[in-house]
Image (tube, rainbow, N blue to C red; front, side):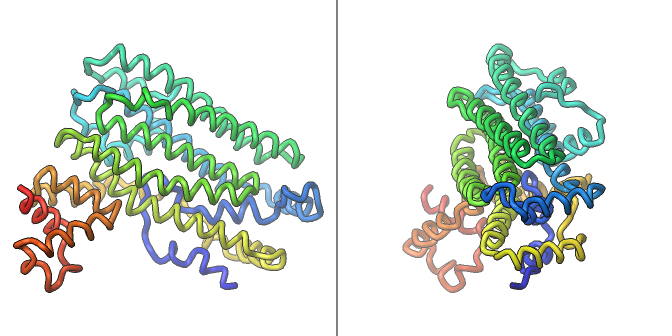
Length: 388
């Protein structure tokens, strides 16, 4: 097997994910290849831990970094909901916590300029001026408790990496999985997603997506690769479904200004990374013991090919391309057209449906000759003009 094909596609493109890790294969390389929990404390497992103990300086550094990134991101995403509020009427300038500002805030938290306490940042709560205080306090209590369980779970995951006894390690990770499930149950409460604005809706669901991603990581640490692969498959579909629901939930230009760049970034950058992560797991599952040893040797001899900084693209202070792209689109399109253009990014089949409609309309001559090259902007604008 050409093992570099596992990372070839990722290495040839520059991905700047908002939520997903950019080094999922290094997680497989560090954690899974030396262990076989399903067969108990066998020779393969023992040798695996001996190898880890011999390389403790490097150990699970990338895995720790990934878990730290998950903690940081969920904390920042939840903290911004304090500024956004919960009611259907947006009462603040959402640009203060948009995609660009959230990326910067996450980096500030990473550099300890701000501290996340119970899933919130005091400086953001102190600047909120939204007439939904009673409702927000109710939501805050539930989310604070849920975030506490998430934090306990991720801390258990990091602790488990240093445990030598395989059964204790597995039990610790299993306890983490239970805490993650409890946290997700709280975040998924339907009443927390009712009568809230689209921006708050997006941020709540982003927290859910991050927690489901954490479950995939934890299953991988347990060497339950099928479960991890299932989580990643479900997560990709959920992101697409939830994103379409968020667009349908949007009721103002200000909300659309907030969600468009963020959903576009997640769909174009994060979802493909999750798909590649799922593919990598699928390929790893197909390796025999000899091929696993070969891949372990390859990782040791080419560490730079398998280890990358988590979300390295998010550290930049430059405004994300998606925000600039959206600003240009706003000049050319109206509100409903922009909503459909975002739907095209998530669900290309909708573009095809609008194509069929336009090819049977008075505008067919404008687009029939070279339809596939016609921009999404043109299709959406013409579609809404034809239906006006």
